[in-house]
View (cartoon, rainbow, N blue to C red):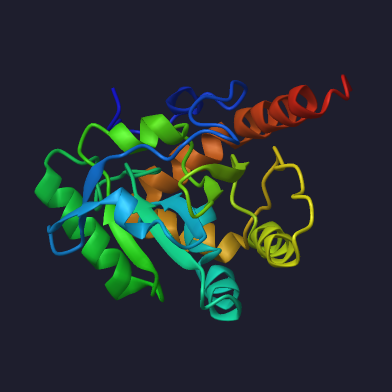
Length: 228
């Protein structure tokens, strides 16, 4: 089920990369902005586009909002866009999306609760764009002016986004996308999980953390061919 009621490691496949790859085109889809107005994804093309996935209950995303704001400030000629996807850690207070209206409501709350100043588009209830991108909770892409993927990362790393944009400006070869992710401060994880569902969401996360770490390590090894 796409909008799962409770997070477990089975909610994601961290070992197999799916979705669009470097060189592929961004899908031509229509989403909604936070006011519920239909917006074509292609309307953001024409400039270099940095696209990130996130949700109100994703600590990895929330913990990087301020860093991404600094990157966006450094590159005012680049378009920055957040795609609001399913809740990463639903709980008693912020549960799984049951309607498009509830998803829009959460996207609006995100901009009220967090310093998120980028444009926000809300994926449909079935996660059509999220599936096309790769289904992980905090992915990042740099899209060329023609809609082709220049850079993809399974986990957003703001410093790497900055390096990629700098390379594009200078006409240099782009760095390979990292498979691993950078952890955020524990205070973000606890705050976001408590906001989602209190102790249940925190317990779900902590209970499954050892398995998640193991999966991430396996992902890193397989992507980099270390075999260790």
